[in-house]
Structures are given as C-alpha cells and as structure tokens.
Amino acid sequence: MAANGASSTSPVEKTNRLSTQSTTTEASTPAELSDVIDELLNGLSNKFAGVSSEIFAKMEIWLTVGGLVDEMSRRLDNLEQNLQTNAEERDGTSSPTKP
Figure 1 (cartoon, rainbow, N blue to C red):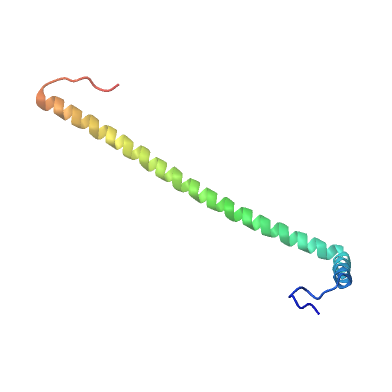
Figure 2 (figure 1 turned 180 degrees about the vertical axis):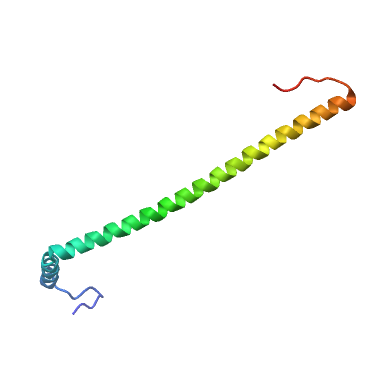
C-alpha cells in the first residue's frame, strides 16, 4: 500500500486510536489517580531526603576541614611567634612584634 516507506495507517484509524486512548484515560478511577499521585509524591519525597542527606554530609565535611584549617593556622602562628622569640633571645636584639 505505501511503497515509499510511509505509514499505512489511515487518518480514520489514527483518530479511532486517539479516541480509544482518551476513553481509556477517562475510565481511570479516582482511586487509581490517587495511587499514581501518591507514588509520585513518595518518589519526590525520597529524592528530596536523599539530596538533603548529601548536602548535610558535605556541610559536615566542610565544617571539619574548616576547623582543621583554623587549628593549623593557630599552630603556625604559635610556631612563628616561638621562632621569633628564640631568634631575639639568641641575638639579644629586640624586633617589633606583631600586634
């Protein structure tokens, strides 16, 4: 019928198929619709919970890293101050200290 590879479905058959699909959709009961919506909401809730957990885990990592950086900074400041003090005592000179 269609020698050039086009679909052999007539416009009437397409209309009948669309009409049947729309009737099938309309025949869904409110309970089925409610179940589909509940399933969708549960899926979204689970996805949100997963994303929230990932965000909180990453925040904890950054807070831990931030605390470690602060601690290392304090230790370096103390080391620097001790080196400065030792150099002054050894040389017997007094150099201005940081405020």
